[in-house]
Amino acid sequence: MESKLIIIRGNSGSGKTTTAKSLQNHLGHGTLLVSQDVVRREMLKVPDRDGNLSIDLIRQIAEYGKDKCEFVIVEGILNKKRYGGMLNNLIQFYNQKTYTYYFDLSFEETVIRHNSRSKKMEFGEDSLRLWWNPNDYLGVDGETILTNDMSQNDVLKLILNQLQE
Image 1 (cartoon, rainbow, N blue to C red):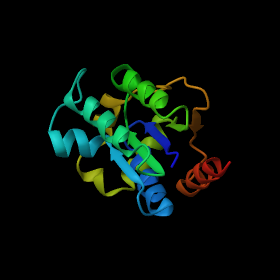
Image 2 (image 1 turned 90 degrees about the horizontal axis):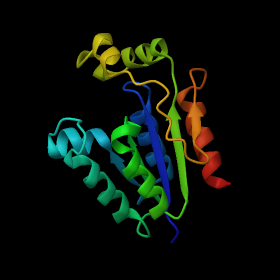
Image 3 (image 1 turned 90 degrees about the vertical axis):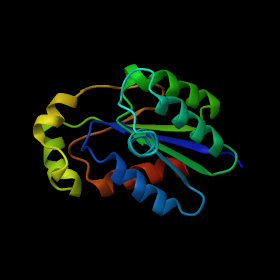
Image 4 (image 1 turned 60 degrees about the horizontal axis):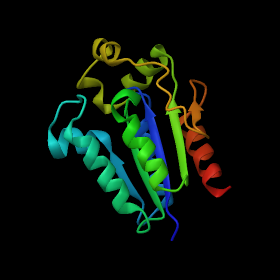
């Protein structure tokens, strides 16, 4: 089996997790979803700092999926400064069988999307502004930029179409 790695990144509230879960449900049995929030906040309970334990664990879980799962999805804010090296290593590990997406939304659109989800009570616009990191592209070949005018359904269709090419 030749596994495909799907990386979905972007600012908090942009739609990464919703997209990744929809994609996993659509792709079905054996699709491995590695969520930065689950690994960092729930499994390890570590702050998002340089060198935190989640970086290596995300890599290890994603590597585990190669040749065992047809699709491995890694999703999260995964800012380039902190996670870029690990993500580039995964891209090499998957022999370039990688699809990389970045939600490049305006701050205003991010706030609108955040306010439509259940987590809106956990943190608000002030936190989103504090965490805001625009234009955080990985800069790898084939990185697809997802924009304000694309709905969740548009994004899902785009990814599924690219996976079939």
